[in-house]
Image (cartoon, rainbow, N blue to C red):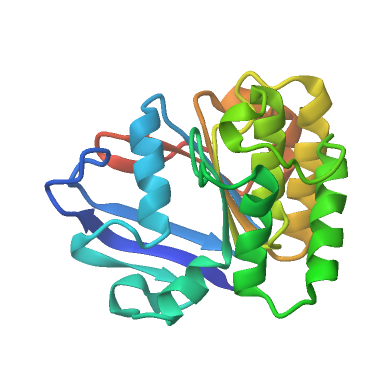
Amino acid sequence: MGALLLELIGAKPVFNMPDLLPITYDLRVNEGECVLIESRNRWAASGMADLCSGIVPLREGKVLFEGLDWSTLREPQNSALKGRIGRVYQKGGWMDTYSVGINIILPLLHHTRLPIDTIIRNANAFCVRFGLLGLPMDIPRHLNDIDLIRASFVKAFACRPDLLLLEYPIEGLGQSLLFPLMEAMNDAQSRGTAIICFTSQLSLWSDYQSNIANCMGLEEKGLILKR
């Protein structure tokens, strides 16, 4: 078992958060673990991903990432730590005025000291892995839905993050993308990356069951261990 990476300790959001109930949330995720969270409320799932990322203000408790309390961090440390998180959003997560390729490359330039040609080469390798010919030069609204999903996977995985937050990544996904996604997740876990994956139905993940440390439900009483 890897070291503790993310911990929610009695984390209670402020009252005016529209997506999360102002109740207590507790969670522990170690390096290399995959935690599956079932939620039929997709807004709440996005809110929980925000909570793990240090975006949600708290009135009680704390959220620790890599041993650091999000609420105590200032710039540039806050942004640097967020750069260690890869995220697949349900919708959005793109800068509409830039090409999808630039959307993928910019965070890599900001959070690494690798040469630009190495960054582009690595990003292109992930593009091919997920079925793209290369870095898409279309702006997000001009890319078809399936290629935008492929690109969102590239954007999340190419930064080789310490934590992956995947919001409903396989709902409605065809087999052509399911295998490379699970293969990339397995490789990431082998490197010590922790994964929190949101789903509408735990059974959808039966093919990945052996890689899952815990299955939880995001419910009115908080995060409930299911199995």
